[in-house]
Length: 313
Image (tube, rainbow, N blue to C red; front, top):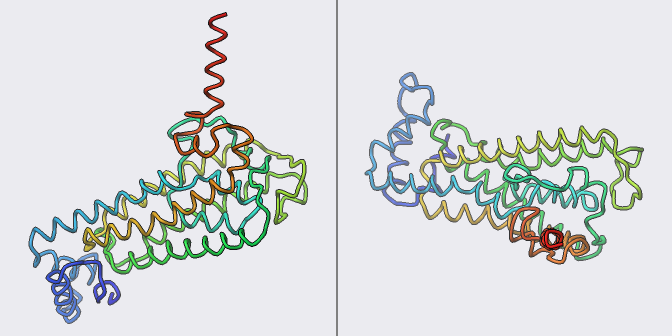
C-alpha cells in the first residue's frame, strides 16, 4: 500500500499531496476492522476525497477523462494486427516489440469490411528489408519503445488509484500485455496452419510457395482476435477512465508517453511495408494514411473509372 500513497504521486497539487500523506498516516494507525470491502486503500481514498475541495475533485475528474481517451488515440494512430503478422514473417522479434508498443491496435474489419483475407499476411512477402545494420537499429529503438510503454503502465498502476479496484496496481499492465498476447496467439495459430515442417522457420520470407491448410481456422482466428481487440479497447477505456488522483497535466504527459511508441510503431510498419504497397498501388503510404482499406486508394479510383466507362458504352 505504501507505493500507492507515498511520494512521488500524480496528484499534481501541494494541498492534495499533503492530504494524501496525512490520510495515509492516520489510516495506517487505525483499526483495520472498520474498513469496508476495499480495505485500507479505500479508507485512505475516502479520507482524501472528504478533505479536499470540489475544485480539486473537478481537476481529477478531468484527468480521468483524459486518460480514458488513450485507447481511442492509440487505435487511431497505431498499427494493426495484420501489420504485426506481416512483419513477423521476416522479423519475429521486431513484430513482438511493435505489438507491445500499441496495446489498442487498429480493429480492421470491425468498422469496415476489408478485401484482404486474413491468410494473405502469410502467403505473400510484404517486407523486403534485409537483416542489416539499419534493421538492428530499428530493433533497438523498438525495444526502448516497448520498455517505455510497459514502464509507464506499471508506474501508472502504482501511483494512480482505480476507483473500483483500489488496492490493485496491475490493471494498466494487463491492458498493455493484451497486445503482445494477441500477437503471440495470432502467430501460433497462423504457423500451425502452414503445411510442412517449415512452419516453424525463423524467416518465413525465405520459404517459397507457402501453402495453408485449414483456411477456415484462419478466419475463425481473425474473428476471435477482432473480438479480443475490442475487449481490450473496452477494458483499457474502463480502467483508465476510472483512474483517480491523477491531475490533468500528468494525464497529458501519460497520454503522450503512450502515443509516442504507437506512432513509432506505425512509422516502422509504413516504412517496412512501403515497397510492397508501391507494387500494388500508386498511392502507397499516402492511401493508408488517408482512410480505411478500400477507401482513397488508386485501385478503387481506377475501378470507379472503369465502371463509368462501362455505363457510357
